[in-house]
Length: 338
Image 1 (cartoon, rainbow, N blue to C red):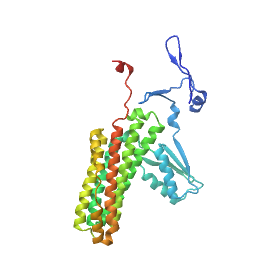
Image 2: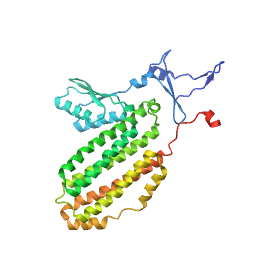
Image 3: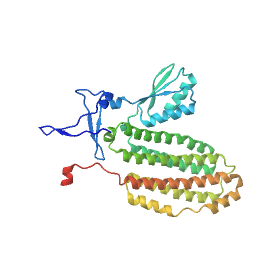
Image 4: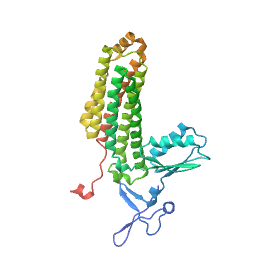
């Protein structure tokens, strides 16, 4: 941290000198235009034009398998890098296909160029084109549909529908990674906070909700994998109780998401009151497992997943409470005095 004393000229202009090390690193010289950005917390950011130019990353893929490369590319994608160059002594055709598949799994990521020893990826998606509140609604919509179909696939032992739901889990993952990337960009490019109209603190809550919804979607896929393992369709008595449990869990998530979208603390507290009354499922799950021992594991997985997504709904409700008190931009002093 640098500290400088404020100086005042005879004409009433306030001056602060800049640290030489920072000036040299950022390429600032006489006539350079710097940006002064007021923050939501009342601070003032000083940004040089070169800030947005330092947004490239390089990954050496030598000695890495496909999974390790995937993790590295996603890490840089989430961190907000605009250009990611994958290099190696010689990139083989199958490795290029892997890189293409990874790029296709990330929103906005395209291949900009290729040589024998490098593949350059670039993110062409502008954060301004993907409002985070719309992305959250899209994630919730996909997740809600996944669970409706997962329940139908499980109770009807519909293998085709179960596999379709499992595939849709990838759509949720892509959107959740997009939200994570947008948050990473806000941390790297401080000007974006002003441009997108949301503080980094507020955006962090959006990412939290996206993560919770991703887990809800994961459980839908888990139930569908359990459906594929069923030896026979669940009995009607179990199906009736499972639908009732699903209705309770879905209502918790729906109300929690609505409370978050509307910044409704009263609704969020109403949702959280249900946390004090856990669902009693053990007796009828044990009875179902006794009647269909060949399905015992799949039946318990379905019930457990419904209980767990209820907990994720409570987490979203708690986030709704948190975001309802996020600090807003400080008002000018004249407004406060008025």
